Image 1 (tube, one colour):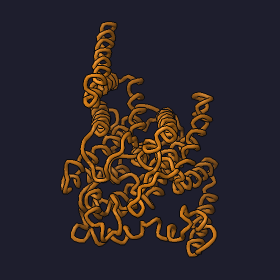
Image 2 (image 1 turned 180 degrees about the horizontal axis):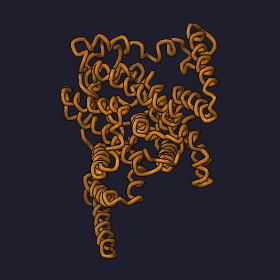
Image 3 (image 1 turned 90 degrees about the vertical axis):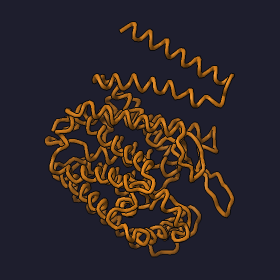
Image 4 (image 1 turned 135 degrees about the vertical axis):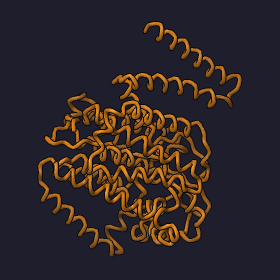
Length: 452
């Protein structure tokens, strides 16, 4: 063992020397050389995880969560070329898949339950539609990302308690937000939301961090806060400083993004989590009904609350859902002739820009989870998704598993105005979906019991 560590240290030193040398001799080759230590680290993690090392597995969990929404560079809208960041993400997806396959005996039998059949078929359908996409290579890679997080989550929950998995997830999101806050102030061109108006480029005050956009950053911070609400006491027991530090960092990040939908999700799902914990289901229904009634009453107004929550002060920003209504009306027309299978998973990034005139502006996804699935996987995909949510949700409601209900609600609420879990590559909503459908039923409602 000592010889192995000495060999690893020597190899790592050689790689570090090569990277430093490249800065002097060939700066343009740095990215190519930098992938070598990443591959070495992945090899060590894979070897440890394959042997069942708890540390290696949770390091992989941390890395997978941290990288799921990470974006370390700016590039053109239509640029889908493979670069260093893409290679790193493909590497982590392959790592998740291989580790899960190696330990398949631990988890496969546990997910072969009748209530899981719809989401198993849904994931299989996503993979199938990638083969009929106009760009099958791109669609296959994006489908791999969804598949990887789902089966790796199945392995995790068959081997470890949900509490420790969620704590590692919160830690990874907290570090992501800390880095994003630093980038927000130190590198505005990367860390702030950039938009175009009348052919003019503007850098806004909204934080995008290293998530690529303010909305992505907002929903990531929101997801972390929701996990904190669900498992506050367990996080406090793990380390007394983790809870206040994580809560403060994630709250500041969410505020800086000025993401209205993410803020609303934290308020709504946080309240729901607290009510469900106290088994006040009737109050949850009452509050939800009051909220829906308030929306119905406020939407027709041209002044007041709606104008206040509009960033531009224009009421049309709210009534048109920031232009989303034009996309929603265009998608059903675009799908004609491909109603059952759609254009192929993740193909919206290529299909919608080709129909910019019909949509009204350039966009890469349908800004609604059902319409996105309709466009890319057809009515079959939509039906399987709905059945998946229904089967897992009914089981969770019967067992009073509030974590699953909140995770599913997170995916659906974000899916009202975004493509949520199934736009292109996996994001934090995809992770929420993977967690929700693979969490084992808790017959005794014990958070630390991971047995079926």
